[in-house]
Amino acid sequence: ENQSKIKHRARSLASIASRHFFEGEPSMAVMALQMMMELGPLSRNAKLDAEQLKLPWLRLLQGAAQCEAGRRNGSVKPCEGPDVEGIELPCNLVFSVLSAM
Image (tube, rainbow, N blue to C red):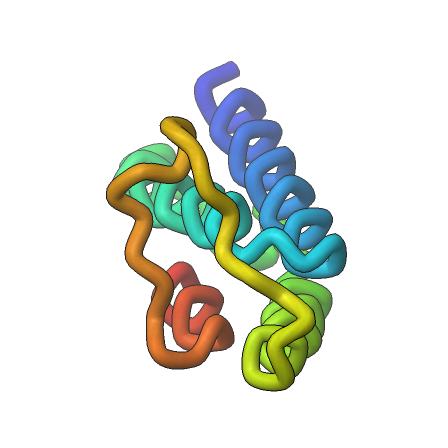
């Protein structure tokens, strides 16, 4: 049961991050990826491997790259508000995905 909860949470957070990258909301995406990183030790303790989790890493990388391109050309701005206070964006959004892997 613990394994299924961890899988569900990881996949849900990956979906949230992907959606926010593709919608041009990098702060929310990075926050979801940070939460995914916090699940890392739990998934290792639950003996889950990458094959069992089946996270959409390629889609996350594509979304981060697209969002980064928008950030560089000025069409994408970081989100503002109390929900994303303290979220620091990396120099390249793809790094946030690579760190979560």
